[in-house]
Amino acid sequence: MTMRKNNRRAGIAERICPAYRTITQCGWIFVLSLLMLTSGGCQVFQRFRTNKQEAPIVLAETSSLPQVIAKINEQSRRVNTLKTDARISVDGMPNLRGDLVLERPDNLRLKAGLMGMSEMGFDLGTNKDLFWVWKKMNTPGDPPTLYYAYHDEYRNSAIKEQLQLQPKWLLEGIGLIEFSPESINSKPRNDGLLEIASRDPLDPNGPFRVAVVDPRRGLILQQTFYTAQGNRLAYINSVDHRFYAEKNVSLPGRLEIHVFDPEGRETKMAVYFGEFAINAFYGDRDAMWSMPNPGDVPKINLSEVGKQAVETEAAAEVSRNWDPHTHRR
Image 1 (cartoon, rainbow, N blue to C red):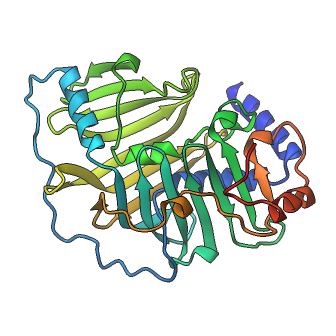
Image 2 (spheres, helix red, strand yellow):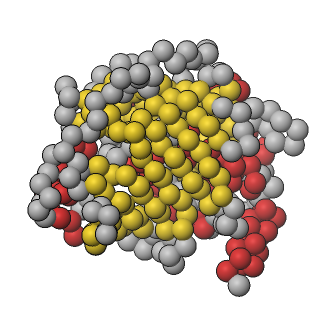
Image 3 (cartoon, rainbow, N blue to C red):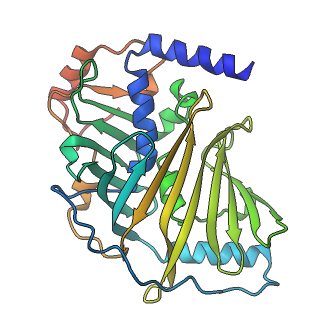
């Protein structure tokens, strides 16, 4: 019954918006690609590490849940910005290259593509107000398009049922989580690990997360995301942690991402990280975290999909007269 219901919803979405399948594909790539930003040209991964210092034990076996939570939150607060090389492997796609750039708590940006060439891929990002996915490649029946949505509108949109994945989950996949004590439940596991379930305080009726934690090292090893009804959306394994003694922070060397679409089909992705530059941001912050204005490329508000058909010419007209620094709802 659930499968038939999901199929019917997907069919409705396709009839409402012919670009639905492209949006869906961008959604899965978005989950992966928000971790990277390329500065243009081919990237040579010279900074991938051959030596590493493993994450140290930082808590006693008898540590309480509040102590474990405090240690995880403390590590996250030590990180303001991150930048690193990344190499990406996705089922059924050529490998992608790019660089991760993020600034806690809300900002991520990516320009990534084949052989590191962003014009052969995507420009993706998120800030405190909205997120966007600019598909740059022009393929038959699927021209370049910029999809975007304001976070608050997207939480209440029709298409969220099809694309419930949230950009912030990728930042948290690296382990940069701050748990709110009033919004968590936990239970120990037989293998000595700890499961912590929590919800987004801004979306109490939305998806929830179950994190698997190494309580001795204060590390997030896995995160599984579920709909409010308990259906699994995705899970992320964070492995090969390396300790950065100068910042007293442990970060994963690899993410293994498993995403499930509304019909239950799985996409597997792996992201390999180079050396992390911690709290060393260089560049124009306003430009980095602003949505681009790609000329005549149509812009589609994902929050409006399901309310009305999208008219490409009208979207292009908006694009021609849109200054991203002055655009308001």
